[in-house]
Image (cartoon, rainbow, N blue to C red):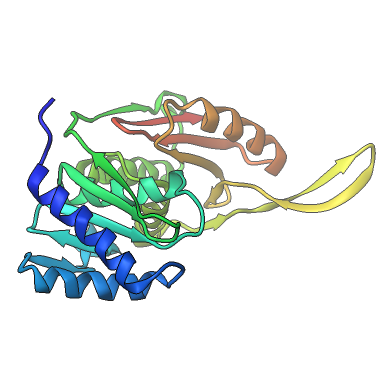
Amino acid sequence: MKILYPKLSYLLQGGLFFVQNEVGIGRSEEIYHQAFKMWLDENDIPYASKPPHPLMYRTQVAHTLFPDFVIEDKLSIELKARPRFLQSGDWVQIMNYLKLREDQLGLLVNMGLGRVHIQRVLREKAETRCDFDWSAWQNKQEPVFKTIQFVFETLYQEHQTGYGREVVDALLYFALKTEGVRFISTPTVESTYKAVSFGRTPLDCIVLDQQVVLCHTALFDDLSFSHSRVKAFMKDLAVPYGVAVNFGKETLAVKVFA
């Protein structure tokens, strides 16, 4: 397998180790960020620091991503200073940058341990597809149904799929607001056991126009998790219609219920 940008990667990794040795252990992310900027300048390496990358919905900016570094306009770096090993959410963050920029290689860096931890993150461009099942609403006339269909078709046309939950939430909420859909996020229901109440619990869903429960996931393998939740939440909230959505790695899947 061909290694992408081996000389540049090796040089950057050496620079990150040098920065931690010079600055010391246990400093804030911003200090390491500023020190690495100085190292890049000293070594005449072209870079951009936290360049804004807007994501659009129709003609408006719905969300903006800020990669910590973009090196030579081809390699993204996400810099952390966590006193622990990095987790899946950190990996998703750099994958968002790679997808948006269409870069093939990123470096996920943690300066917060006793030794710099660097993970090479590769992203191969993949063909995406949509799998929309609107059949349960085929003979329904509620205006919100057409708007929901338009929102997901537009999101797919403009962004396909493959983003993490934070980006998906930003795009979805912005699209719903733009199209004038009234919605409530994380509605609450009372939780009981044998007539004993444990108070109200927020549900991980959105209620659209007081008629539709929407459950969505991002980067899951399939639709099954949202599928099971939306049917349960429709019952819990006494809402007649539902939408299960998964913004998967390669497939945007949508299924509706009535």
